Length: 471
Ligand SMILES: Cc1cc2nc3c(=O)[nH]c(=O)nc-3n(C[C@H](O)[C@H](O)[C@H](O)COP(=O)(O)OP(=O)(O)OC[C@H]3O[C@@H](n4cnc5c(N)ncnc54)[C@H](O)[C@@H]3O)c2cc1C
Image 1 (spheres, rainbow, N blue to C red):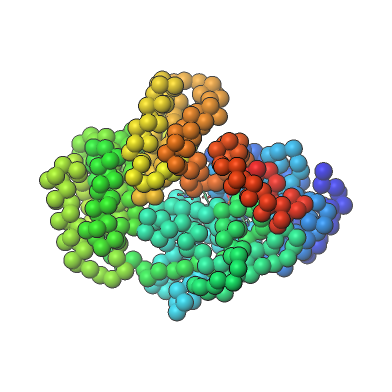
Image 2: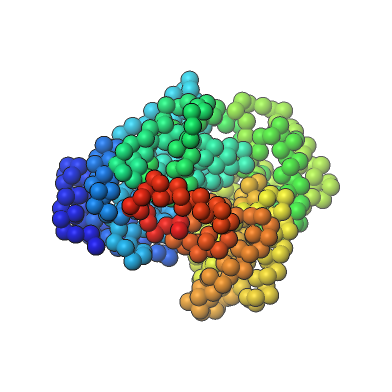
């Protein structure tokens, strides 16, 4: 229980405006985007500075008050919603941490407080002719604290890596209220454990991220976006590797989508049009980008397209010739999850296998779904260049949604077992949260789990930081 005394103290400990008990203000923070989780809490902390957060967290540590950090609340695995388990939890929103945003064009870094959104960092970089490469459909809402804590991926991982690769260091309030700061922008620092690395992807279980320093890159001034129809995922994979070679490794996105996924987007999302005239089983959306104007790149890409069409690997294709066309093609890809919502229940698997094994995985897992869930409609799409597939299975047309969704755990087990056989991961992007705890316990090697729990116990001996998540 969080006592009335704790609430009173926490409302005032960091000054007025740094916490609230107003139910209407708190309500939007208690529900997730997919409507899968709804939580509860009597109190939301809203620190505006690291010092305020440290005072609040120190008090919670002293009195065993459990905390759930939240940023933009775009997570999808019930990791940032308080009160989902038996224990009472206080929400600590880092959205008001928004004072410091500093870009260093010489160091090619940006340092920003936890509450800034990814879109704001992208815009700040663009103003200086630079690129913050993290790009995901939730970028207008997801925050620095959230993307660090989930090690977010997105569409540019194939070229720039995940948030882990982009993060040079973080500042965080640890579970005892102390502050660690590794945001000096160093590119090399071999002085023992890199604590930032532990906080990246920790889903708020090891501390509250208050600031982070990220790498920047020269802005992409030339961008070619192609929509390609292909016969099989194996052909798409062959094309990925040959496109990387042909363009001097300048493929910055390579997304795979099935015909059915595209069909749903065209059916449900207003103002969308088919990218190509014919019907094809699989589609690829590819971006090739360069930081300097390069007419030869355009020519090489055209040559690559022509030769692969002749070879039959590309069945048909189109290259966007304006920003509006680029946006229209990307809208088709980015609306894929949204379109599926209109077709009833959908059981999700956010999985990764080694890139070369994606075609075999899709075949095996697709067959397993057909056998065990006849009539269920598979839409497997995602970041082929990272081996990351959103393996979503929709209810049979007209079936009962609740009855279908009751198969969630059983279907997850079926698919995750196949993922494990391929040496894959049961969470490529979204994390474990409360949603996949049992699956983590079932499939993560015991020795890894023991080490993870030892780290958690050492840094958070009172188990106050997001105690319902991961384990
Ligand atoms: C439409 C849509 C598309 C998406 N596409 C992608 C995608 O392509 N790639 C991808 O990786 N993800 C994707 N996501 C998932 C989500 O956007 C990411 O996980 C994102 O990083 C979450 O950021 P957030 O600020 O919203 O964090 P929240 O949802 O608020 O929190 C997520 C986790 O981080 C923790 N956390 C948040 N802030 C802090 C902090 N300051 N300190 C410590 N812990 C904290 C929370 O406790 C929770 O465990 C998508 C989500 C949506 C809704």
